[in-house]
Length: 312
Image 1 (tube, rainbow, N blue to C red):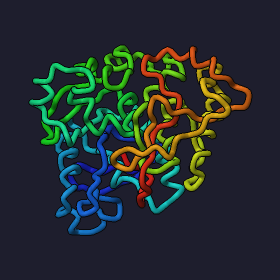
Image 2 (cartoon, rainbow, N blue to C red; image 1 turned 90 degrees about the vertical axis):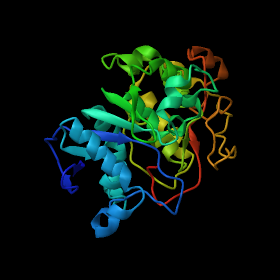
Image 3 (cartoon, rainbow, N blue to C red; image 1 turned 30 degrees about the vertical axis):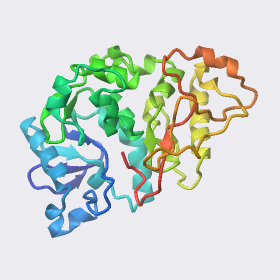
């Protein structure tokens, strides 16, 4: 695992013994004129002048106030030119978030005062419109850390996951028990429920529909970018190998993954009517096994391909 020192801003690789570290959860910029600071960018002396360097600066500042000397940020701590390193990172990412001392969530489209004044918890609420809650990768980043704190666009603390659990529950359908108490393992939820949590979430690359859910189902798989729809089927097959939970079978063998259903930003939606193929001979009657009120029977969503495979 490669970590960034909050004082020197230099990267260092750790293997067996990790120091305590903070970790950042955020959404990647959609503006090509103001890209995120990458692993390669850190090698350039002028990277501190990049517009998005503020994310690194603020993450290091917050970690320092917590008495931590190391941080992990996905944009700059992974060498994405190495397929082996990228595969290791994606398969390890859930554990990295889980093992962090604290996770800072930066909501770049949210103002703290708006949240504090917003009594709404439905589709009109601030959290419901927040982009962070719509991305595929941020689902595991929400449930994995033991301690998670939300910050607004100006890096003002809004509250931790427990304090905001009611808002989060209404936005995600994740039971408050899993949000308030890190000792309550979210994997107690049925597989069908956990699949339902991914409803309306999006990924930028088609294969990440499956890859972003590895941690949610305790699955490890080799990455095969270019395999397209098959990635989600492989995920289901891996889940079946280790689980007796038959809510995984809540799909019809004749259903298709709706990759032709596009959202406003070009991402394909993992919506409530979406369905996906699973193992042969499984009927729709099993859908009754799902217990989530926001049932979703399909994969998360996908959009335009970029140079990076991890885009929150």
